[in-house]
Length: 296
Image (cartoon, rainbow, N blue to C red; front, side, top):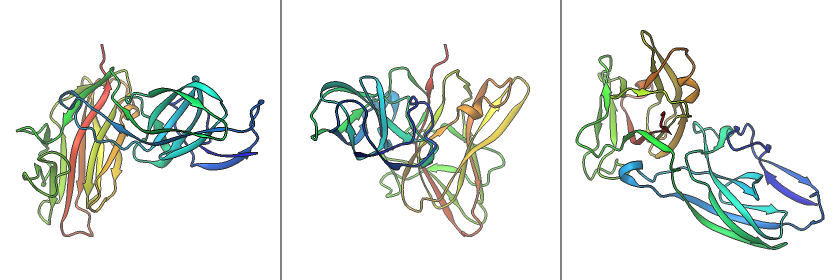
């Protein structure tokens, strides 16, 4: 009898993970009764900065296929049983928490799976160690904002009383590079609403917003969709305070972008009031990316 920790699903990688990890004990089928093991420490991201932006990532899981058969999804670092012996083709797909939610883990379709031929031995661990991924070639970056250029690709709306600026060079508040985005709230500057300067076509492919953030105030992220004579401003997620901790999130825009008939383009927006229990608060942002596949 072998005990295996695994996610409760056996569907392709685009299907959402809807439950938490659970432990089950079950007898392997087939002739082999003693498993081999595979361990994966972590997965890091390598990018072409000029075209793809920062290499900041929050890869939390690995989705594993052996000989194109789905084995399971495992939280990193991971060590898991494989009922194989000899050399087999292994595909390891980087996984993330969609919208930052543990219950909606996905294999991130814009990261490249790592493929290895691994020799498995019964009751022995094959160590994959630290793996490298990249963005897949079809990935298209409709928007990149790392706050390093002279201007900003975010516009403050007329309703906003607060505004987004850059951290000074050398500031300890900066996440990466020379600058991050910063918003300060006080009793006068108590409402923020900013939107992307450009309007982007709604593609046929899935669309993700990647971003780093560090806040002492809640903030809502959403989209404004445009039709020929209509528009809709729709919130998608409210980010909680991180209180000094930088976090990376992958926000799925796809469903919201396609929620209304006749919409053909969109902007991303961020908006919030100053939390009532704070006299002053601050929002920090970095490395915005809209990642999709280019519409032909």
